[in-house]
Each structure stands twice: as structure tokens, then as C-alpha cells.
Length: 107
Image (cartoon, rainbow, N blue to C red; front, side):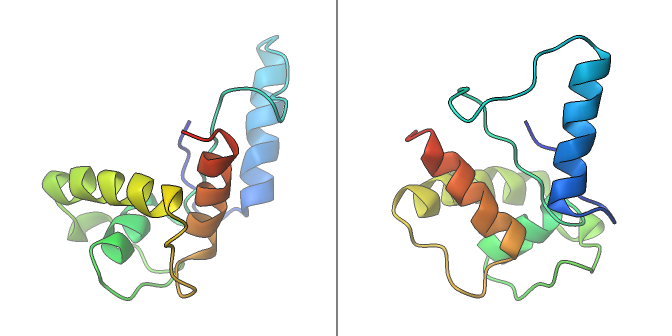
């Protein structure tokens, strides 16, 4: 699952997800559920820009600065970098959290 953080924190967005599930009668996610919850801070394009080699911050809106091809390329890079623990220290905090979530499932 992928949900933009927008102006909310990761914890706030995860709580929103939990509340939405509860309201829909869906049991809350458990740590051993085979589900990754990715919450890019501001929007997914921040991660795409970073994975394509550009410096980024998690407050700027990069929505109009990436192409569909960049998104596809970045998704492959994200999986590769998470699997090999090659996410750089300057990666957005939300991207590092996504790698932890990804690696929790050992995909």
C-alpha cells in the first residue's frame, strides 16, 4: 500500500489507515501481515527524484518534475537498494522507513 504523507507525519498517516480500516470493519494490520505500508513524505515523486540521483527534501513538491518512465525506473532501483541495504544516509527518512518495511517481508 502506498499513501502520500502530504502534510501529515508517517505516524498520522498510519493512524488514518488504521482508523479507515476500523471504520470499514477490516482488522488492523499486524507486524506479521504480508503487507508493506509506504508513506512518502509529501509525495512519491520525492523518492523518484532521489532515486534518479537528484538531491531532495521532504517539503518540496516534485510532482510535476518526474515522468512515468522515471517512476518505473525508480521502483526497480528502490527494490534493489532496499534488498542490498544500499540506501544512502542522505535518503529521505520516509524512504529509509519504506526500506525497513520492505525488508521486513524479505521480498
